Image: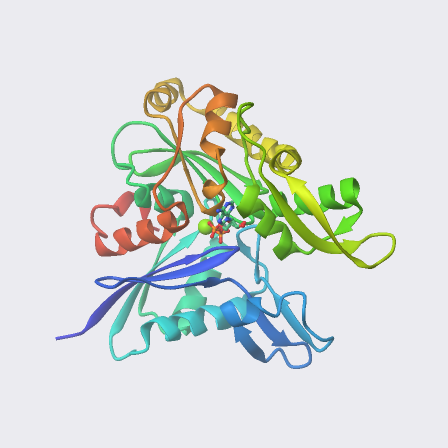
Length: 334
Ligand code: ADP
Ligand code: MG
């Protein structure tokens, strides 16, 4: 009798999650690696490495090895996958069947790179699933039906927009611009409007606390105090920032995602488009937690939009369901 363990990985630009069948999500850490410049020796991975972002001396780099959803630094990514798998699984006397999500439309070269990284990290069999399909499964969309479903998975680096029917992608676009672009817009806004310099983590914090994609006129005005450095004097200062000001700064990067959704709809065959009008658009990914993002899409597209339950976990849940039910998701698995 061979012991077998079914494992899934969501390798995201911002966060990596690991799921083990029978246990659930066992690891959820930022996709960050810190290593020494001199010999590329890994010094820290995940939570520990994130603490180092923007705080490293000259001889150490803390970086995100995935850019725009694809592997930008292969050897560092391989080391990271290996680290996360060992941390999550511990006992490799089992054979490990691994499902890992890849961006829709990944090239053969990119897919092979992911598979070989997983195998050298100790996986026995490696299966790939395109991220929008995993997100849809995790959002409880019945992807195998002969009807059109639209998923908009908005993470840190990319927004993936897909129309799915019969378990496969029918129309797909990846928009370079998601959560991180929202943070950058806040950074720029703070500099222009208040002469205030803030870092990425502060910007993300502001977004999570008072960011709002679609401000209703009646909504009351929330404000928050932001600490940063004055652009001119170089000295620390505190500024009061309103929900409305933050919301306005988010409109430009949000519009880029909206245009991607509109483009995909315009390319969708009419029967499937009419299914989407009936069923609505489903939003997943961490940026799905941005306040009123569902209303933003509904209002600007004229089709109902809903944020999935626990949007940060849709891809990992879907990849986990796929490795546990390989036969039911045959069409979706590569
Ligand atoms: P990826 O798949 O690219 O790793 P995730 O789906 O994990 O990305 O989402 C990460 C993004 O979600 C980050 O940009 C983060 O700032 C954003 N995010 C997380 N929580 C919230 C929130 N409550 N409101 C708005 N954005 C959020
Ligand atoms: Mg993701």
